[in-house]
Image (tube, rainbow, N blue to C red; front, top):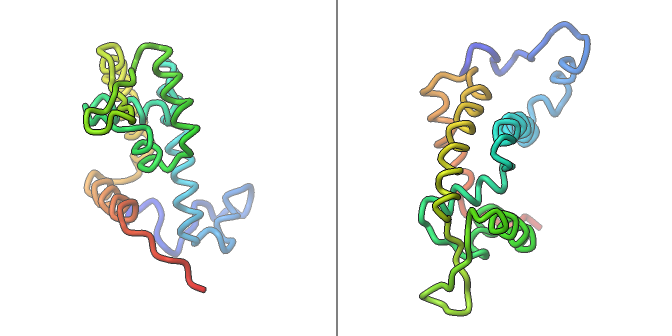
Length: 167
């Protein structure tokens, strides 16, 4: 664990300002801490993507399709955990900027796959550099080894089968 925050310490012991709220029950609630870290990470990434006219969601779609994965809109919806209508809007916006295009899926002519254009791949490469710089700024409290372990653990959570809710 990073020396900046041990399991028994809080970000501030001054008792003044919002830092004192870490002593409340949510300060040790894993979903809250994860959500807060995510919010901070997203804010930094959003800021880094402004010069490219992208937000985290549109960047995510562009990055996925720039890797030549040729996903359908349904696959993007499921992977990004977004409503299909949100994916349609994201793809429409990227398509209007000529960064992606829809093509017929050769394995299912009723479906469309999303493909990056050359302009989309070029913009994505530039945006990726800025997003990585923002990522380093957000996670600079962690060592490289801690970042890798955190990434591995989050990927494990993100790919684990969903458990049914208890009655």
